[in-house]
Amino acid sequence: MIKVKNGVAVRESLPRFLRGLSRDSLADLSWIDPALGLQGVAWWPAEDQSSPLPDDYHRYGTEALTPDPERRVVVVVREVVPPTASEQAERLEQAKTRQRRQIEEALAAAIGEGLPYTMPDGTADVIQMRGEDRQNLLGLAVEARDLQAAGETGAVQELRAMSNARYPMTPAEMIAATDAALAHFKQLMARSWDRKDAVTAVVLEDYASATEAIAAVEAITW
Image (cartoon, rainbow, N blue to C red; front, side):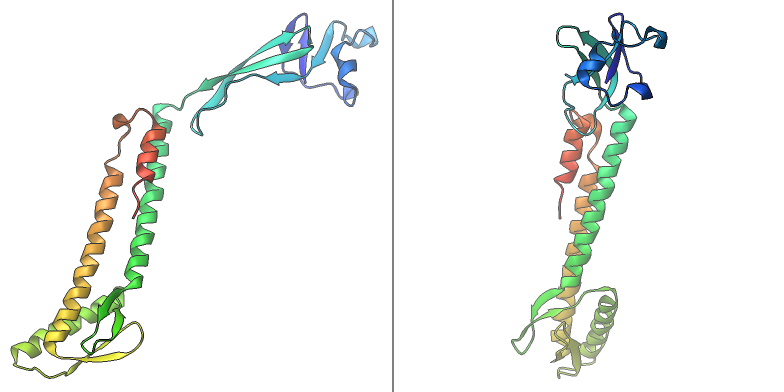
């Protein structure tokens, strides 16, 4: 409810002793005891005719209150205020941070899935590529090259896959398996860097609004 006095509407709390009265009673207080000083005063309901906010980044500012005596309502029209340049920049950076986090999570998931690989005996399994696994692969790769240089051709090495199965391998087979896994890891990292670089490259100046810039950021997925 909005207070109306002498044709002017102002936001003022309804006095406690008037709370609970009907809308009709509040619309015209000529019946009230003059000693209360409320002659010519009324409280009318608000009717919001403000334009809807175009997006989450705009906000409402100052409002205009216009009494409508015929309908005994106060028409409220609030100014739509666009975000400031600093607010737009901050929101864009927040969107970039969220998108980078999603890319990092997707990268971690892809690394965790490992590399599907056909083992020398024809079995389809997965070479693991988590941090400790990559260290093990590097060690096996170095050992395989040393063995190969020494002329070893027998299946003297062993690779443990995601299934926990152990696969005997020759140095050449181990080099092929570890090279494939490490190359796959590099591809995943390059993909992550490319996506993050694309996120960083989005700047407000290239778009009509922060909303469009943020949409461009959110479109950059794994």
